[in-house]
Length: 482
Figure 1 (tube, rainbow, N blue to C red):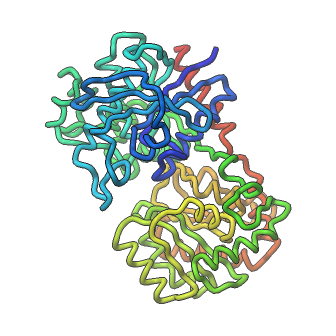
Figure 2 (cartoon, helix red, strand yellow; figure 1 turned 30 degrees about the horizontal axis):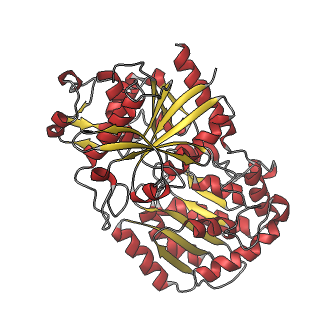
Figure 3 (tube, one colour; figure 1 turned 120 degrees about the horizontal axis):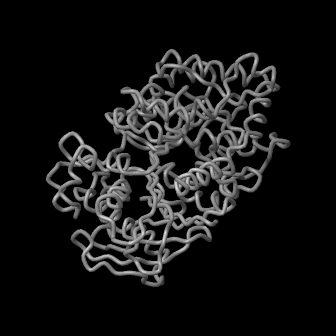
């Protein structure tokens, strides 16, 4: 039996992406196709999305969707079905998906994404003619109210089963109780087993409470969020629903992340032709105005935030340089952390270089040219940059948490001797532990046979969507057979 899934998310690559969520949502349709699952993706009609679907057919009209008119448009996402919620009052704005050009969150994000979730629930419960779905799969807090609408205010038709996926529990969509009257939910929904959360309204909490199944993006993170230090206030709820929680590691799209076919690389290569990476290293050095050399070149591609451990890395840059390493960093985030890295680049010209912002093509060159990628996250639900690093022979140096713990095999002596080590892990995100991990990477880089073994073992690892897609398909079938 073919299963029809409505995937509901605020991002989907390549139309809109601010992080890993967009990559995952963009890759899911192809990942599930092989398992007799048809995915239709619903995303908001941001300006860039509307430009891509400007001549699409109108499939449905909402004269008043929580306070503003909206239309449903058809489109395509990598050859798969796409639906776009065209609501100019909510989404036709300059800036990012969640904030204005200065980075400040929109004050009405609660209404924007409540309307988005309401539209998703209408699609998944019979209100939109011509559409019928077996499963509604909601991603992160922006889609969190969709399972709640299915539970408390369905449209009156056949109601789909629901899955709520946590990509990062730190982002929860918490708002004052005063918004509840504008959500078009019955009074009974404002309760501890509904949308109420510490006296207000919690979007992610609502989805976790109402969904038929909960997933997160790695087995280790699924266990971590049962604890107060990782659960961010939701650990109690998750423990009560622990039998509905599963961890499924994200995959990566080999059509996008493949060093043998990547147009962003001056020289393409595979595990048998690693020497070709040298040309990419030279290009990366030139792009960042770094001194050329054969010594280890580390890269960072991330948000510059406390979660990502970037404050600790900023304090460790001097030790990295003193040990013979160089650093190329691409990212943006906390202004104080940005300035700390800019200051480090001024202290070490030619050895440390910083690019504030994001550049997709440059991120590919960094994976294809740097020797190692640093990921010292304090918590990391899954992480994708370490998977890209594995695929590109850019050895990951990671904190032992979440998906980083699940996807990297530490380079201890036994693993190195068995040629199964794929990277370097360290415990406790501190200056001392990170400095030791960097020093180990520098020592191993000086032993070519060891370093090549790390690269080839990583490149041989299978982190495509094949396994993850099958697990999602199995979960959908379990829900439908229950």
